[in-house]
Amino acid sequence: MAARRETIDGVRVVLLDAGGTLIDLDPRRLAATLEPLGFLPDEAAVRRAEGPARRWADRAVRRGIAARDLWNGYFGRVLAGAGLPDELVPDALERLWEANRRDGLWRRPVPGARETLARLRAAGLVLAVVSNAEGQVAADLREAGLGDLLDLVIDSHLVGVAKPDPGIFRVALERLGASPGECVHVGDVPAYDVEGARAAGIAPVLVDRWEAWPDADCARIREITELPALLGL
Image 1: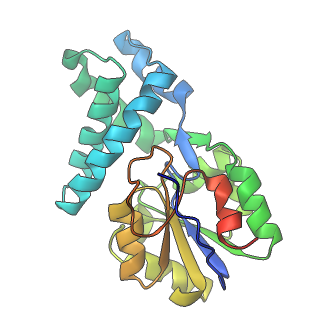
Image 2: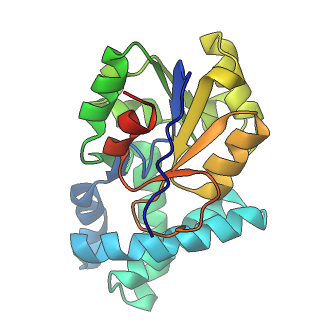
């Protein structure tokens, strides 16, 4: 099914999720973290496994799952899909958790992300990231070569509130001096990014790179590169 592409007009501020929207899992960091276990994940297999893992995560968020359980469930499914033996999963999950807290695992720019942000910025739009993270997302975005294109980065760990709680969006709006009606929020997990944005009165845009939600009831694009056209640029 084709992505929903109706134009959204009158936008001054674009809020964006980070992981899965602007930055991807870095296969080099995954490999370095898991190599001591004798396992080198295949990048294509990891990519394929992320779609089903994200669908599971969306359902889990709606059930109110705890953050660490969400992490374990998501990565457990990704690693299983990439072929990691079951007996190595607990150790791998702990290693990945610590690696992400220390340096960040999502540090590879999504294809076209920098070009898209540059185009939005050139059009005069204000750009901010609103991310559920562990305190390191600003560094992740800088490492990915995107930090200089952003006006603000909101990290849930640092502000004490996380998506889908609308409070995290209100923090961004207050710091930007913006109103909900002049914003969109762009993200890749409906339970976080669609429901959370709507609760804050912000129009959501779903980036569905894995074709996981073909029947989404909001503006939906396949790739971040489609965002300028959606905003009428």
